Length: 300
Image 1 (spheres, helix red, strand yellow):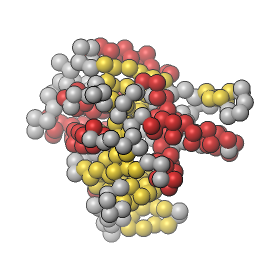
Image 2 (image 1 turned 135 degrees about the vertical axis):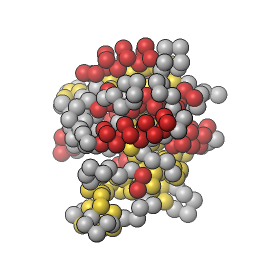
Image 3 (image 1 turned 30 degrees about the vertical axis):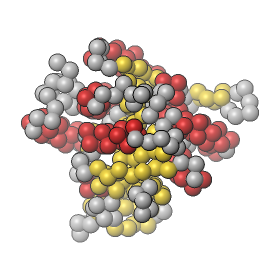
Image 4 (image 1 turned 90 degrees about the vertical axis):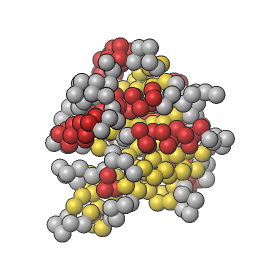
């Protein structure tokens, strides 16, 4: 049996955070956020870790993790390129900003041969989400059966500002029907959680399941995403937009090309949308270390 792979998206620019948050230290031993997902993956007997980076940070990431992970697990970096060939031509188009999470997924296609979990580098997911997603994939015989870890909204909010979250709607079988980006989620003046969809403010339940980009995929997703990216590029108006992974998945669901099981996760997912979030994340990690979930120094 092919061991699953952990794929980490670390090519973002971190505009609101104000720096390369993928390489920012959060743990007492200087650990980055993605170090904790790597540590969990190793303990779950994952076969390989692939980190998707932009060209500017590839050397630093490769040098760092080749040393830290040596003898522990197979490790590889892949670059999410900004230059692409326009469909039906031999012309290249280049831009400074990455093409988005859907394109990041495609960057890992040559490095993944079996089931894999895809996550962000700048979120702490917890072992529960990664373990549930891997276990689901390993039980599947259907190559188009995918998974998504769904977190309770209350466990994903930032105390420092409003955030965007993709709200999951499921059917009676727990399969994803739609994943809709809700903007400006946060507390209003009377203590309700509200969001903005199409310019309208609505109240959202604290227990609502939302996506934090912890996906479980089979390799079939690469061809699906490649086809959708070609369609995306055929629209010239899209050349300054991002190719988002949730949009790809929504299209596959609508076409009945794939199914996505939403796996409810009760742990907290913390990230660094704003600079002030760093203190919150450090506090959360220190609590987990105190409780014995992680050692004080992951790689010692």
